[in-house]
Image 1 (cartoon, rainbow, N blue to C red):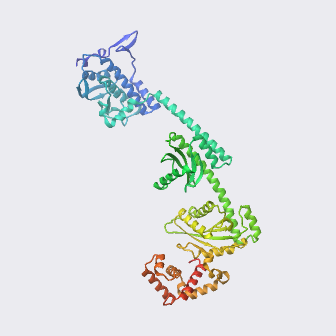
Image 2 (spheres, rainbow, N blue to C red; image 1 turned 30 degrees about the horizontal axis):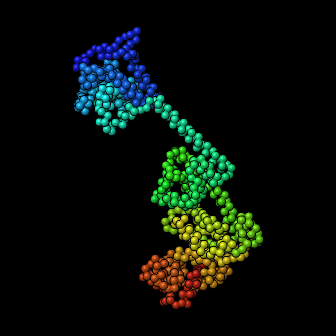
Image 3 (cartoon, rainbow, N blue to C red; image 1 turned 90 degrees about the vertical axis):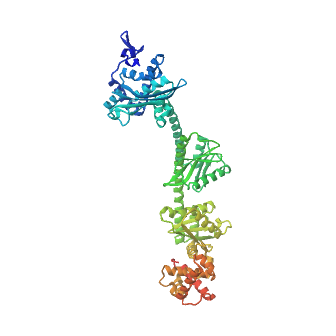
Length: 624
């Protein structure tokens, strides 16, 4: 161990040739530690603390390797002696006062089996300058020193060894305590150490960053170009079809735009036949995730991938825009996701424009229908002329339909959006059927004028049943009931047909949601505004106390009696309709007979009179 006590000149072989300084035959320079501190400060300010760590660690590693190279060929020293000389080289060059406090080095077959060194650094120039320039750190700061020790020992043993500080003066500790082991033994801390050693050179990283920026610039230019082309199409007043033509041409993949009911709004690059199985898999995906897609998403299907994004309007998802990658992976996800986002936004604008046009047109048609009902246009010829302006032929026979809707239990809000849904549903139903009608909206009901010439021999009742079933699927928590007028000829008398439809709908129920005016029989013809008071007196005379001072309980009894009479006195069927037990139904019927002052409800004449009275009550009184 005599080498530990060599003089500075013996350790470093310092010489001076032509007034220049040489150490171990390598030209060297002397710098003050303050200059190192300035470099440290400027690096942190310019490239950040993390990059500075890697910079100084590799700088120290290089210094350690060079010193190890000078001693590695000395056959007079053992490997342990060479390693223990490292701290003296380190100190001799002015970096730190270093000493080893413990060491463990085992060899096997000429290779190092175990390596662990621990020690202390005092008067670290690196810690000193960090405190001077930045104050105390929260973590160790001697990156050059750990790099030097790591490079020195790694060069000597021929395997990566890393030294790490456990305590550091720069972090406020009394001295710097360090430990060196093989990289494989550091376990969870190895990633941090590798980060120091594997960091790319700054120029190389700048080169890579520049390439990435160039790619991003080209991608952005492409996206901007497509967006400008699509925007120009909007300015020209073109539709979604022309938009999808451009996108399909530019990205070379099929493009689909569809509403939330999977009805096609636009499609390019794929046939309907080929798209059907893909659409089915998309439906399954949405059902699995409760119909929630609120951002750009990749959906797999049997032979490819779908890049899909929602189309928003008034903060609601109204449809989906998709790019299809048939038998392919999505390679350019970032650029394609930017493009599809812009396509979605433009589709939203175009759909909104169409919506505004449609709403304006339908509002005009609705106002026109209200004018017809109010008698503002007494001349049939005048009405037909105005109908021609909106491409509707009112020269023949027609029906008037009143479609009432009621919010069931479970519907917490009656906001404008949910109120408008029935209107949208009715409009879409007749549009799909290619039937032109007039629609007017009133509170909790829609009024429809349906020309017979639009039905093409279809039965009006069958169409209304299809409409109610269609609406049940589209609009939750709403009960739909319809009343259909008798067939009429004179369009100027549509107000009378409306009264018929209003009378008919009052007899519609959840079990029988469609009632025609003809179903009312003679009672529908006999009741009118002129004799309504007389009809009310007959109702009171027939039903007596049952319809006096009505409250919730009496309304239940009236409905029970009505169901009982409609079902021909069948107890089981009536109980089933009312969701009652037979004994519960009998209890109600006994109460009804007490109010009516009758001992039996099975007399056919009595049943007939009471049923007429109840039907009349439903027609003349909106509460039933």
